[in-house]
Amino acid sequence: MTWRRIDLHIHTPASSDYQQSGVSILDILRRAEDRGLDAIALTDHNSVRGYAGLWREIEDLEMLEYLKRLEPGEAERLAEYRRLLKRTLVLPGFEFTAQFGFHIIAVFPEATTVRLMEHLLLLLGVPEDRFGSGEVGATTDVLRAYEILAGHGALVIGAHVNSTHGIAMQGLRFGGQTKIAYTQDPHLHVLEVTDLLPVTNRRSTARFFSGAKTEYPRRMHCIQGSDAHRLEQDLLRESNLGVGDRPTEVLLPEMSFAALKELFAGSGFDRTRAFTAPPSDPVKAARLEGNTAHQVFHESAATKRSQGVVLRDVVAFANSGGGTIYLGVSASEKRAIAGLDDISLLTEELSRDVAAQITPPVEVTFESIVSDGKPILLITVTPGTHKPHAIAPGGIFVRRETESAQATRDEIVQMVTGGATMPVATPLPTPPVPLPAPANGRVRRGPASTAGDPAP
Image (cartoon, rainbow, N blue to C red; front, side, top):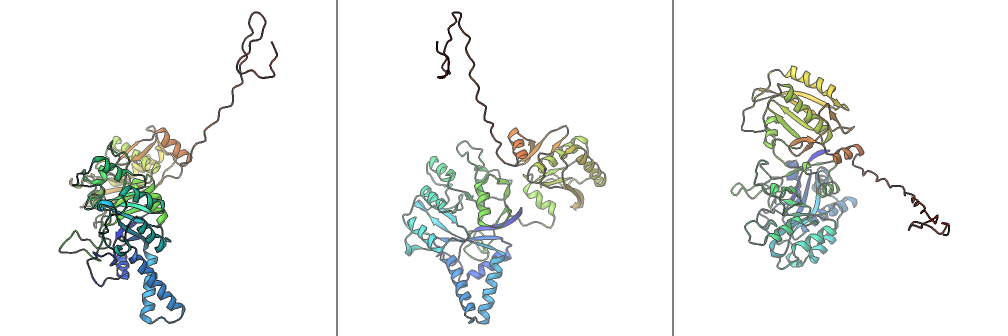
């Protein structure tokens, strides 16, 4: 598994409201590389002409190459396309304007044809002469659009849901049931939000759709995207972002549409996070996120009790997806870094206790670093290969959001079976029990008697 950086909301000059002139698709791909993006989606307003133009140009250049008629400049351009497309996955898609002006992003698998996507736009009610425009008149309602797009294999994303044209309808006086339906529909996979950072924001859209509210029981995957209508951010209007200015990071085994779809169709919510440019100090970068499913902070580990809590975290990370423990620093970035007095002794004690108290053995590494002039101990825990791991005498722990908690019976069974379903034993049929004979010597027949029973 590797953290990959993605931006699934990028426009091209095929969108009528694109903000810069003279920009080519090749410029967009180069900018995506500069921003370190592993995957992008080209999502023009009600159009796939930008994506179609990309491949049309490549096909023309390849035909000239085949005919041995490529000019030097054309050969250089083709080589650049090939290099960039090997570096960054480019997915096809569009941003559909549904009934009442709500925006829905559809991202499709790599091999999806332009013909299919244009057919879907027509099916959704977009007039052909309005391709590329955000104003398309009366089209399909939101829920029906979800169903059609998901039925054709798309990853369905509510675009900038907490902003203009968003399905969360902030500032609109629609009924609550409509908002619930638009944001909880099973054909909707992801919500794109503009307030994923800071992660400590208690009123963020992601927290609202965390599954904690009775009216919104389905927890939603939340990502962020640039909604770029230009190459670089507009310095005069900072809300107009450029390519890759607001990316998301996803933890994937490979960079592909299938891997993205599997992630967003599942419950691995800890495998998605807002990208933040790391400060020069990695401890400060980690503190920006605070305690998460993959990291935890302890300001002190001077006592056996506090060290026991650290061992519990080691077990929890090993039984989950692995993680990092920061000792000598609080999760609150507002608190001064405390540091540790004797890292060598603490490392020796914890290393000994990990080996002695945790079974089966877990793989951990200890690293001493300095932050703000204070010594900090980092403990990196590798995901266990022989789960469940247990600590004596505390038991089996797993990582749940920001805490290490006792594993439930179902979680233990899942670890033991590797996620496979336990077979259900079928009870053997119980033979009928013969009824006692009455005193008059006649045999009484029960409902379970057969034709072979003796006659009375």
